[in-house]
Amino acid sequence: MKTVAVVIAARQAVPWLRQCLESVAAQRLRPAWRLRICLGVDACEATYQLAKQLRISGLEVVYFPEHVGPFVIFNSLACSLNVDVLVRFDADDIMLRDYIGTQLDFFQSASQPLITQTWSRYVDQNLSPTLARLASGKSTARDGVRRDASDGQFAMSHSVWRRLGSFRPWWCHADSEFLRRAEWADIPKIVIPSCLYLRRMHPASLTQSKTAGYVSGWRRYYALQVAAAVKRYSGGTSPECVHPTVARCMGTMFSRPQNY
Image 1 (cartoon, rainbow, N blue to C red):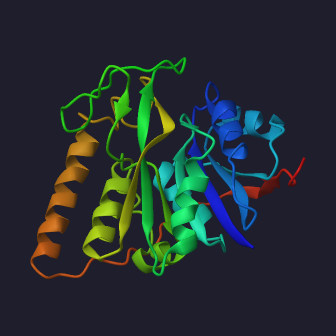
Image 2: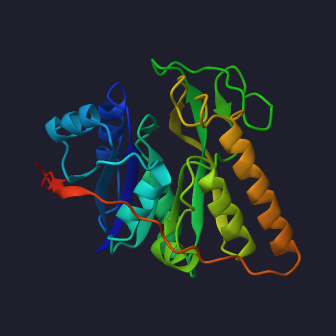
């Protein structure tokens, strides 16, 4: 049996975490696959207390007492996982029932490591479709449908993770940098032309907040670093394997047994 692990970093996620995790637990997978749900709580006691109360089969929770950001959280969890496929997902978004299964069909038949993504639908805090402004300056349709992939949510063969090393320990935009590195490393990427998850828009989300949003100074700074890296790669430099920056966790992993 093969294993897919959904890795989620959560901070100040109390309003949305239950819906997110329930949507992950409800995924329809083929019998050949086993699901793990790995939640890293980023220095937020309220989110951690909620996670411990949720009755979700297979949920594994780790608390990180120092605020390190979502990408260091992902690095820290992924380094300890021996699985076939890793899925990065945000704590405020919602998977539709076939989000993982549709992507796993490609991993099942793939002859080489790969990355997969899907289309999405932008929704407001109450999950109603909404028009959203994107990083490019363009907007979605009024029904919130985005007919291309967002960098934030994707699945990858575990061997892709080992080959590229990790996310950079940035506060934002490290997902985009990772995908550019993968592209220049000639790792195949498949975008599935179906809206298979809901992307929730709210002022505190990573792409909308003042500190890490599309127009923030941090994101502009990181974007310049990505552009410089692409220039290096186009000149013949091989993409780097980034040694993972990991964070200290507190205590042992709280794990909810399968079929709880």
